[in-house]
Amino acid sequence: MWVLETVAVAFGMYSALPVPRFDWNERNMRYALAAFPLVGVALGLAWWGACALPLPPMVRGAALCALPTFVTGGIHLDGYADVSDALASHAAPERKREILRDPHVGAFAVIRLCVYFVAYFALCCSVEPTPALVRCMGLGFVLSRTLSGGVLTTLPVAPGSSMAKAFADAADKGRVRAILLALGGGCFAGLFLCGGWAALLAPLLACATVTWRCVRVVKRDFDGTSGDLLGWFLVKLEFWLLAALYAAQMGGLLP
Image (cartoon, rainbow, N blue to C red; front, top):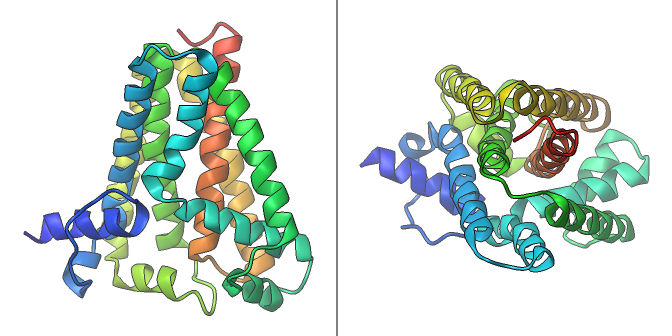
């Protein structure tokens, strides 16, 4: 029963999909971050379903662009917007953390969100939804959440980040990291099996670059991670994973 509760906690927090509601407790939150990548499985299946429909390219692109927001309820985009405002302030870490807690949206958040959606929509319209690309992007949705959970269980949590701290403190960090490490390795192996070396190396480069950037920003600008920062990281990572797969496809390296 606790396994189902753990999965429900992960989906209830990180998705908009209907799941049974349980009171959060030490037992069902212990491995909630390890269940977080299952939301990526649901999103990958939604992507596969949209690609299987006989839709015009622009309609299909719009559906693929909108699906992450519909499945997650926009929780990660909220973090992306907040971090965009905080980084644009060029203020001290303490002030940046205050901006993250501010419920109001700033001009830079709106600008960055508009640019993100235009660019992501263009990518979704441009990619050819071959079986290899759809499988690889499905694995990408799992991989982004695997890395996000790994960051939260590894880096210190910034002062005042109550939600991230609740999940980080409740997690059995050693075992959760081991599960996420195994899952991440499985994702990279799956990428290779789905599309060969290009499908492995292009996402690997994207993951390494975005993760390096995230860790640098967390340490330099915020003195620790938070839920908003993890959302910002996940949104950027999924964008660049798709861009990397598109580049491999355009280069004739991805079937």
